Length: 562
Image 1 (cartoon, rainbow, N blue to C red):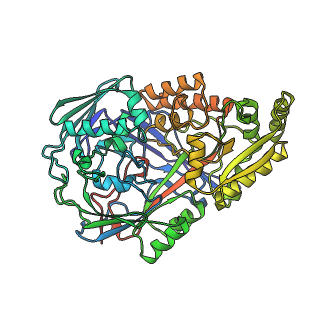
Image 2: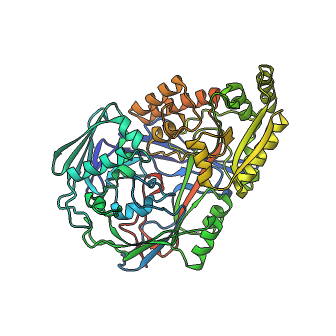
Image 3: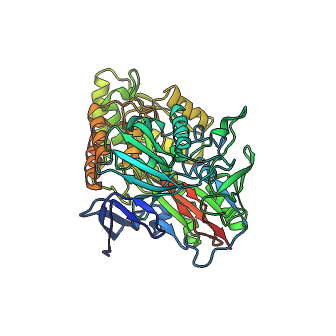
């Protein structure tokens, strides 16, 4: 067993290498990386032994095609030379956005976040190496001692691409617009922010209703993408921001082209333009990268392709997201999952290893835990273990009280989704369930039936856990009043644990709350957990100085190509 210890500290306010003021979390962490061989699978575990959270190099565990890699930047990410001006970068989008309005498109790396950040920038960015947040479009980020008040100072003279001033009133207008639209993370913002104060032309103060040390994550996502008021001047929304690029062309399902903003606050970007294009799956993305059609791509969940990409030596950023592969169970009255014994039986009946074997050729990470071992907040709290005998016992109890054993599994007719559905069907029927697979024609239909109509018994889904803010993506599926809670799960004890997680003022306290949450969801089973998902944002060797921010949003303001 190999052991390496990494220790660092970030004070509450400190000056970064570039002279900017950074809002930190008073972090000290000792991370341990241990290589353990088990049945041919390399497990590299990173866990905090005595500290307050943080960042640094983290192991991916198994997954990534079974490769020995770490979470974080792979290969050359810092250029290794003098930046060169000019050129166009072609980025293969994972899910091509239909709108560049942050109130219409989720600001995440997979769904338009990188495209919108190019136009609007973000007030704040996350720093994956440390777990901190740093100013980006803003000049300074500060907080009070109990993390109930956050202050941003704007850069003097910053303007939108239409020439109007980006001042405190403009920031408040844009964020108010975002929250009013109930977009993306607007519920979390509305729940925690009591009021936004415009203190002067360059100062915005966020007064929170309670402590939340990770509040700046919201300013690195949709709320922090500041839209100019003139965007709504015409009959249709026009993307006008203060980012490093301005919109040149937007052809639905064909391309989005942005060009350098000469008046960007940090100077004209090195790239002349960035073109975003839709892509057809992970295999097609890798082939387009190899042929030179793409310079960058966002590859999600396909472990085999991700492993091949890493093998080929491409630079990139590897992320392992907890809650990446799971099965929501409808808890609503009249559904089989209304009986907790049925939900527990489902969880005990399905072996996550079998799901991984069939849907990912055995290359993914097998886990029934909320968080992967690579997470900064991994606690070691165990999930539910595969136990078909226990499943039969629980199912028999439910049947004795009148349950007929029938359940529908809703899925898309897509290879990996279908494979997972067939594993679930066989596993559940082996313990006494009567399963019918309900195929839907598209992601749109699946989302409508799950989140709008709540017309399903069981399905397959994912929530992209973020180390930047553990509460944010745990509240989504587990909070009783969360709009992202499609299962109808409502548990007062879970809600109390989530509030404890949000109000924690150290990573140790956050980890304690997450361990409690794991124990509670083992008992109540709103979702069956099968493992995390692997995400690789990859670029070719001509691309340099790529910056990754929250939820794998990529910032390209300093990027250059040789």
